[in-house]
Image 1 (cartoon, rainbow, N blue to C red):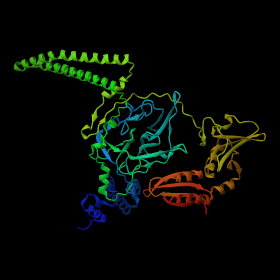
Image 2 (cartoon, rainbow, N blue to C red; image 1 turned 45 degrees about the vertical axis):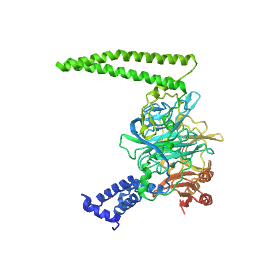
Image 3 (cartoon, rainbow, N blue to C red; image 1 turned 180 degrees about the horizontal axis):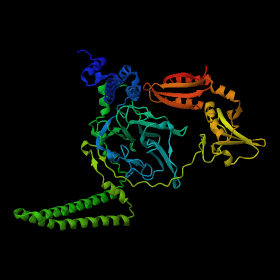
Image 4 (cartoon, one colour; image 1 turned 135 degrees about the horizontal axis):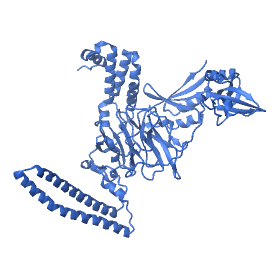
Length: 612
């Protein structure tokens, strides 16, 4: 059989699909839809080819193709870095409370919305994990634009610190959800649909850097943890046996599948080029090996306190069972009486006999219930007399749990929500805004020192006395410095001459008709001409393409930090790119580039901006 080419498929499609003959735009839309279907089917090579084909047909379709091309290209790159975890079990559970089936602290999940997550309770995010005794809390919440970010708050004495974004590198233009610390506190797992991924929510891990005291650049966990679908809430169990996460890759819209994997501290990565093999890998089918299963690790019952707790739970379950029986009998009798009131003849006689029979059984059931209740109370008194302390509320919560998946040899136990959190928080520190503004009342800068590099200011006036707020005429920020017996006031901090010039007339219109632009380099005055010349000098940027397409190699961040330069990351043609700079000196940029090349973990180059 001859191989059917992509071009033949496209030509054939135009003959079979109504509307395609109407123009290239309709064809492009169809190809884009096919590309996305290929991506969702893990056929990333085909998805990339279709995206390129659509771009070839209509060059104006770049905006439509852009994001799809990126995430399809990311998936193609990640096919080179697949791991093969041992799957112990999997279970479909309701989306609305899937997190309650994780083996975590009892009643540790707090339903949203709440004080921490005022906009929660929709979509995938239904709760915040805030177990009792927590003093260092990471959680996801929506900002003023509705985008979910990861925040941190720490308990200091009796007050929680004002929540802060944990790290710029862990924050994207889209949502980050379900941050979970590893048991040793050295790794932070979370899901994001705005970082380098293949569509939907992907799973990421960031490692704690002891030298910098901050979280490192997050890395996509790759196949089969991440997929083109939504993958989220990854955790490692405290006993070190299992890794667990959830995904909707093979579920309906109202459910998710929880996967339990053997913990692997050093997963081996390998390339998988066969699409069928990739699909099989992503399906995460459990190995039918009972020796790999340990139900105790999945129950989350951290409150098992020995024989006393077991005795109390047995007696409590007896009381609940009898209470349920009494309730069912009572409701059944009421239902029969309702039917009896409208029945006639033989049916009425039968109902009368059935009602009498049940009424005779009810006292016996009530008597058994009362004896069980007295037995439970006696057990509580015994514990009290012997100084045994049990957390009754937690034991009751355990008795309320639902259990699923036992037939597969691994038990998923449903917990219950804890109470809504109530936190006494410190007021957030207000940071001074150094953006140039005209306000109802002017403001002096909190810090009169000037930043390094080239900056411009608009000098307003010089006078023999200190300025007052009334003198500022609404301008902010205003910098005041004393030179001899005179006080000089200047407005704004502008990084470019163009910005300063754009605001000069605004200052003059406030009544400062003699206002003029002044320039500074590293805090020292220079002529505006010199500053503008320095501003337009040749600037160099170091561009680094990691070999794995996902993250900077070990040692790279240390080399970059030594330069003191900013790091920006972006995606170009489906690959992650890191840009460091700007460097005024070519030698400094080349030194960093050479250091990165010596790691032999990617391609590195220099780019030049500014005048020749």
